[in-house]
Length: 107
Ligand SMILES: [Zn+2]
Image 1 (cartoon, protein in one colour):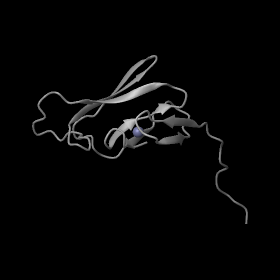
Image 2 (spheres, protein in one colour):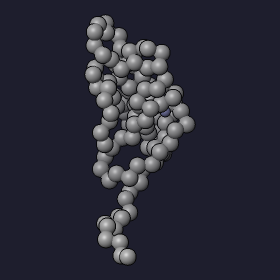
Image 3 (tube, rainbow, N blue to C red):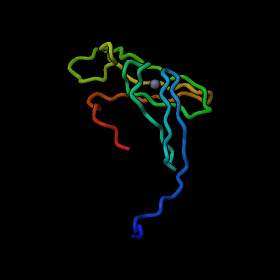
Image 4 (cartoon, rainbow, N blue to C red):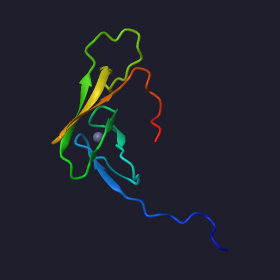
């Protein structure tokens, strides 16, 4: 029987690493994107990864203002985390963890 499905197209692949744990991954997405993962090194926070070959660091910033009744993102110790900062040679990116943004990431 002949396969009638779409012929798979060779996608570009991007390899990712994490400066805070040993997790690595590969994505096959031609557009600009960042791979996120639940990071053991950041106490279970969903953290951005770095492309293999890019040196940098990823750090969680604690939320400094009064949390009040907001549902905030907390790390594994219950510390409210406001944002995750990625520092690379060419600059910094800030991933803001907005209150209530606790759903699943859509890709
Ligand atoms: Zn990690």
